[in-house]
Image 1 (tube, one colour):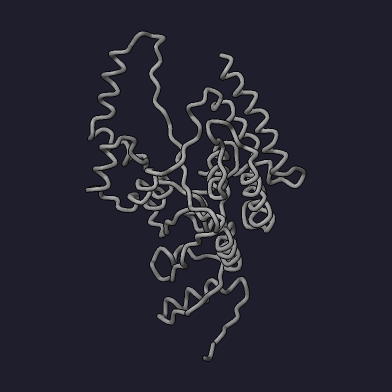
Image 2 (cartoon, rainbow, N blue to C red):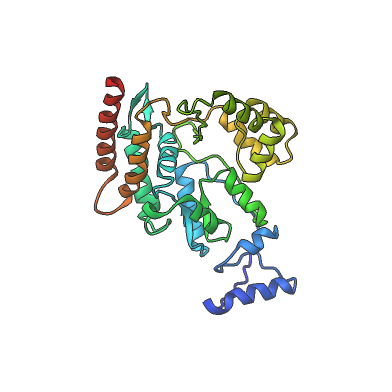
Length: 305
């Protein structure tokens, strides 16, 4: 096999490739600082999605070599850290709680964050400080072609579709030994008693959950449906076929321990602190150990109230 190689300076390579494409002399391989316009035009091969952490690291290295600014987006800022951290913990066989008790500092969780710290953050494959990176910032960068991979959501899919940005969807990789596990972060509607408006609340929620109103709300904000009937409608007749795999994932997705009265306080502590486990002056084990201690103390208050 003979390979013809052309070398251009960093400043002229982008235009050289663009000119070749304009002339119809499309190269087999090019290494330049942008790719999104060619991906959006359907001109690029797509790699098989990584299914293990080892494959994820290899894919991130390849993206870095191709000039992608942030190969993997890791949102461990205060808004989303608990969601991102639990996603990695689950796919190492861990999780936030086990048998109704908090298990934040379980060995599997420590191992998961250590892997992130060494293989992604320490290798320069994420933002410099994931503890201040939030999900929406990374979503915006993803749809501009500056982030190669990110744990996404239906919101990101809608955002990418509006910008006509090409992307692929795959299950979150696991450590290669554990079965893939997904999680769902749900928002809850609560009706408070204080004002005595039970019937008015009942009427309003009845309106909200009418099929046409609920479906319009879901479409507008790029959310997943929250009722069984709406889920069945989308699986059977929904116009956006790409969210169907996400709906099927919900059937077995893990939720936070939202039934514990202490969860509000514990989740706040995780959001504020777990990103610090990626910093050089601390460690995942010390951060998770402190969070576990605080969670146990908060849980004791559950039993005393």
